[in-house]
Amino acid sequence: MIVNDPRQFRFVPGRMCLDPTDLTTAFPHGGQMIGSFSGLKLTITRRSEELTAEEYGGEVFESVITGMQFRIGGFARGYDADLLDTLFDDVTTTMGGNHKSPNIDYPGDTREGRLGSAKNQKLLFAADNAGDPSIIFYQAMPLIEEVAEMRMETKREYGYPVMWHATRHASLGVAMIDRIENLVIT
Image 1: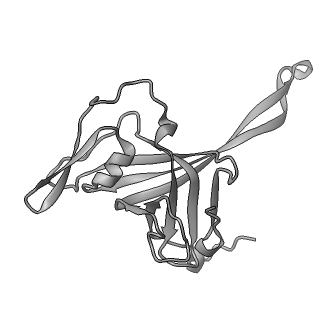
Image 2: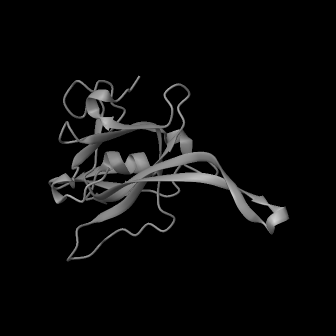
Image 3: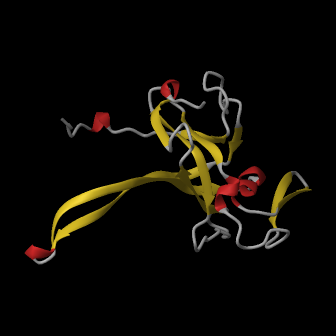
């Protein structure tokens, strides 16, 4: 039973990495740390088909669950060439002054019609507190919002919206949400 107790409300700060190999080691767990995010959000959507009874005027009498969809996304803060390379094709990084500056060269060498799954990687959201839930997508397909707005203002930090869609891995499934010591990565 849920109790409306503000002491049970949780904030779950954490970091994200690609292709972790050993969850018993320190972050990034043998993988590659990516980006700094704000407003990170996990969305779980259950898809279903309604069955109707024509004899009762099309009244719904059953719902068949056809699957679930997992997505995680948020707002990437600042420049991160590794993250941009994960999301976009044809990203180059140049050195200038005291910082790296990633450049997106579209269309570059990549042409339309390629499969998004070609960039699938294992994605881990590792909660900073070991008691909080962490999330692993076994095959995370990077997505860009159809209309991605990059902030370029003097009063707001530079950034861009990012998202990953979990697709099925042949033996591990789609996703797992649990404390980090209970997650399975192989």
